[in-house]
Length: 197
Length: 213
Image (cartoon, rainbow over all chains, first blue to last red; front, side, top):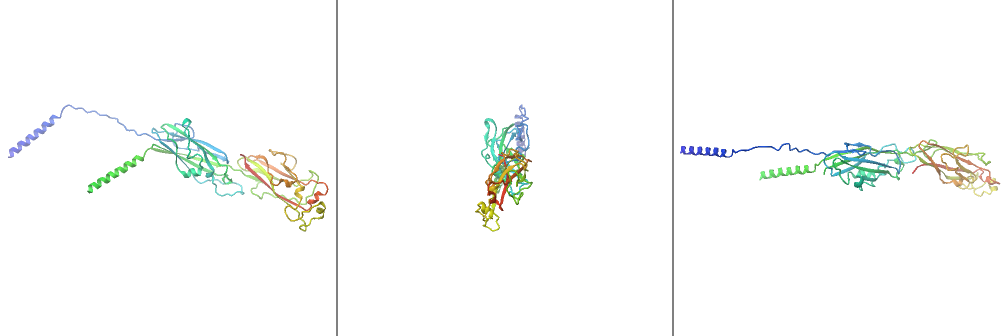
């Protein structure tokens, strides 16, 4: 009985070796290498003039001194997509802190707190240039205090890679401003966001 | 059954992570800061003072005299202490004419002879304001309209100046302007000037500066 079992085991081993020898035909191996997955960039740059090299933030796009009711202040913020990925959306928000300044010198008028933020109107707001220029209806006509309270506004279109779009705003000092607005300063920060989606 | 629940929980967690990753697209934020809007000042000072008290001029014991022989006027120095040009305006207001008789309601003899019949205590009982004239000049030395003062604004009698705005002058920041109100009592015919005996005249002078539009 033992001899029979040993013989069967030997046959099975030989058969296995025989099958292994059957698949060892010719073969070759090659590679597809350097399949690189490089991520793109979305890099926002701001400037107060057309500048396709701009990166980072900017200051004093709209600044004025000695401003009197009825006068305007125009400035253009150029929004540059310095990256390689298109920004489908652009947003802008405006913020400011307390109104500062000594106020009117005369004691005739109430030296109470100023409502300067409610007296500065974004009278004209455009986005883009040439045939692509559009008015930003959501902001145009609004006063700075309301614009601040609103939060971020979505601009009418995004910015393509390596391209820029100008955001032009004409601010008007409302003629209904009273003497409490004299000798005051409001410091405004505009925050621009580009997003891929 | 427990193994199935654990597997389901793992699938749920993976799904959540996948959703989270979906909204994390590229974005970038930059700012335009230090956009300062600083307003101007418009500040008129009369005799280097603000407010309504300014200065009082008082002239006592006045009498009629020949033309240009005596002025009871007053002078104010106006200065634009603000940072923008302003349109200068002046007006005489709140005119009061008192009789000041010893016995209220009883005119003095010279007044009675001159035909005065208003000798009460009211602000419109006196006649001095109808006998004197006022003329705005730059200084008391003569006829010298300057800095665009429109001629030499004159009110004869001074009562007619009530609430009439005189303007036409622009004061630039730092400008100093002298405004002299020549106030004279020229002699009139007959006994007409006696109507003003013992009377007094009071008025306010209001200076203002308005933004040039």
